[in-house]
Every structure is written in structure tokens, then in C-alpha cells.
Image 1: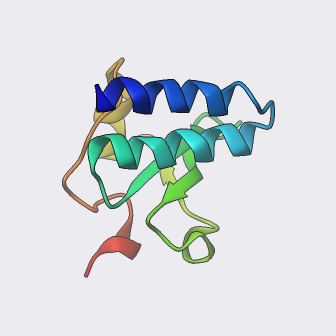
Image 2 (image 1 turned 135 degrees about the horizontal axis):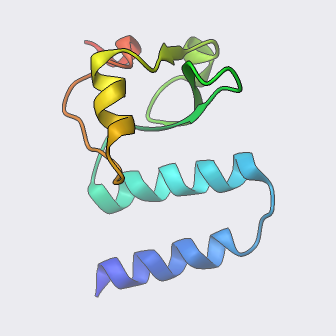
Length: 100
């Protein structure tokens, strides 16, 4: 029942904004809560089609990752892009800023 309530809350929040950045941040924040994760990111493909850029971080310092981008031919990025579903990772390979 808690998951259904969380999804309902997410849909209500998403319905109140047309701003892409706000929608992405809402989704990544809700994902952290829903998955009980400390860190999550949403990345978007750059216009060049060869890089992903950080679009919405949660649990990271956005200033430290303001220029973060990853080549799509990196092994982990290729695996993520090759699937149709979101991917959970227990590694910080894409986000060195979370390495402790």
C-alpha cells in the first residue's frame, strides 16, 4: 500500500509541472525514496549522440558533477543503453564523486 501511495504522490507532482528539469528531479528523488537508495541519477543523451550528460542527481553534490558526461561506448554505459529498462547499479563506476 505504501508503494501505491508513493506512486500516486509522484503522479500528482508530475502533473503540476511542465518544466523538464523539475520533472526529472522529481522522478529521481521519488526513485531514491521508492528504492530506498542513497544515490540516483538521470542522464540524457547529448545532441552529438556520443555522450550522456548528468541531468538530475540525487544524493550527490550537483556542483561537483556540473560537467559530468560519459561516452556511450563505455562498457557500463553501453549495457545500460542496450536495455529497455532502468538499471540499478551497485557500483560507482559512472560517478566517481560517490567513491568513498
